[in-house]
Image 1 (cartoon, rainbow, N blue to C red):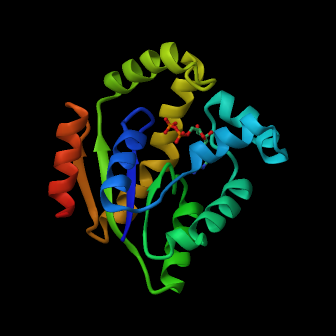
Image 2 (tube, rainbow, N blue to C red):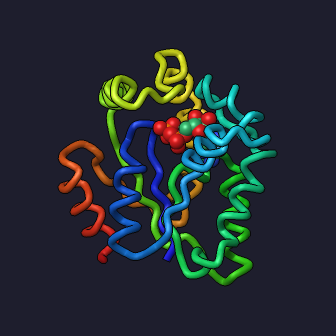
Length: 187
Ligand code: ADP
């Protein structure tokens, strides 16, 4: 089973994705984590993407598409995965759809974590104080929110046509939200 967690930056995709992946015994593929570890390791890819990341801009599809392909091709993602942080652009969505279709698979559920913009900003600022992520500066936060609205939110319409989007209120305790996710996907 392939489950996509969609939501604005700060909506809790990582937290809920982790809980869901552990509960269902599926690998979680997180483009943001792959990018952060490449930057930390100082790989050529990490160096190439750092300026986009730090400004809160999307890393170009020329880099991300290959990353997505490699991750979906991993043996442990053969029968399913939780997708966190991608697809984020139309080209990424097409690649995911096409790759799964070639394997007679598809996205089974899309969970849209719904959080108000005020709360997103509050969470990212709070996280900046704790984790010190380089893209949690006020300018980068504002870019990330704008880019989400411009490039990623349109994917909601793309998937809504297929009737597989489930909106989950992303405000409440972590446990309550996890419980709601369990309820909407029925397992
Ligand atoms: P958030 O959703 O809170 O912004 P992520 O860890 O998902 O956190 O993403 C952080 C940054 O990593 C993005 O602003 C972007 O620079 C880069 N990134 C992550 N995933 C993608 C992707 N699928 N396409 C392009 N850039 C990405």
